[in-house]
Image (cartoon, rainbow, N blue to C red):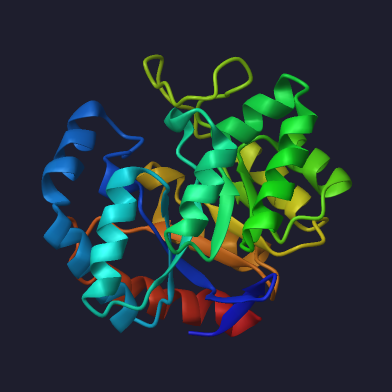
Length: 265
């Protein structure tokens, strides 16, 4: 696959996501449990091997202890996929999460999207600035995820990040609580997606597009069609793969991306 650069880090334009590894289906509690049962250590490592075989060189995964141990074991066994770390929101100290990820092999780090949405909504801009400095000091490509158009607009205008990671949807607003809570259902509004896509065109640094299929809640063909219009030549997309549904998903998604999206670049 063709690569783009986040700072000086070359990443394939299609990046493997990892929400299914951690049981975040954004569909139902039963589906969450199904993913957790399916994705054993061995199956996750096989999934990473299949990603590499399909030409993908990067995975985005949480900076929790489970993922750190998993990736160290994978690399020690000869795996080469590189890690963009998402700070784990439940760890509390996001600056220490950055340092821990960098110390354990992350090549880039981004602040968890719920945390970014919350810090912005609470006016805690100093925390966003401190996070950027900590990522710079740790020597990793520095990014910020988020579901809020307003948060990403502020980051665009006030920080010099290496990348912004923009969610097409805002399923559970985090202005009052940074943690994911779906007790009242999740919202997959195309109007939110269209606002984010419009904003992306104005962001100076590379953008990683994510939740482009609304976590399986909207049609894949529609997601690829929007992606083909929204992605700029220097952007990438993060897509989670649940191979229990389709063992050939990596190969098929790479082929579709190369034809529908990269063919237009």
